[in-house]
Image (spheres, one colour):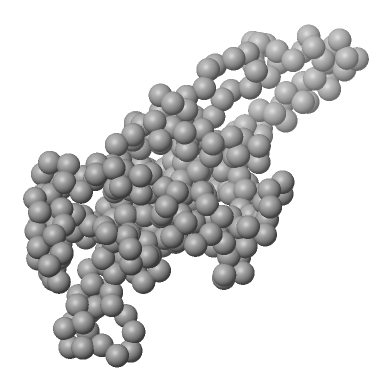
Length: 343
């Protein structure tokens, strides 16, 4: 009798006290099982072919994909993935790949003799998903199949990587961009205007070691202040963040780099123009009534109830032009739900 793969267990079986007839019976049973399984596969294949349904590598877009977790779904590359990226990360797949290419060198881990490190894509994806969805570390790390400590470290690493990869993403406009901004605001009725300035609250967890009462804002939530300057295209030109939520906007302004640079004459360098009431200026920002009137480079609405026709028209134009900063806040918090959710 010729030796087969099933009878190769003959020698091992004898070492365990099995008789020859028992060994042959086990070999026959395994052989029969293999034949049955193979026949069943042939029958299933024939049934699939006859019904006209054959497995596809790329599922049709109207077929809902069986989920294997958020990270597993993001790894798939079919015709439904781009929409899935927009749903989970608030960006297209092309933009995500651009961010990965820019930040990969800053977050890549060294290969050691311990466990395998996470892929660069997974490390970068988790913070983007957490910021876009606003989920907690517990649910977010579970969806990505990583530990909570790993998720915390990934957020820190990717935050640092983004700041290093995009050092000029937020900067004061110069050259052609500066000319475009001045032209756009001039068309709105505000010559030599560089942008609109305002503050918003970014919700945080209650500080453990610091004075938590300072971070308790007027909305009865814990937050920090973010002072932002934007143009009419909702592009951020300057940002100052970190002061507790109970601090007034004026104090944030006076302690910001924006105030120091403006007072030193480093920001507003447009050719002088004459405004109403004989005011000559080389540049300014639009602000609300919360800023002091004595600030020479922030233009506010008149406000009040007793307004003349000219004052009312000016306030309307000023609020419409200044609305770009409010829209920027709405866009920011709608895209990154982490900044919108309460704690």
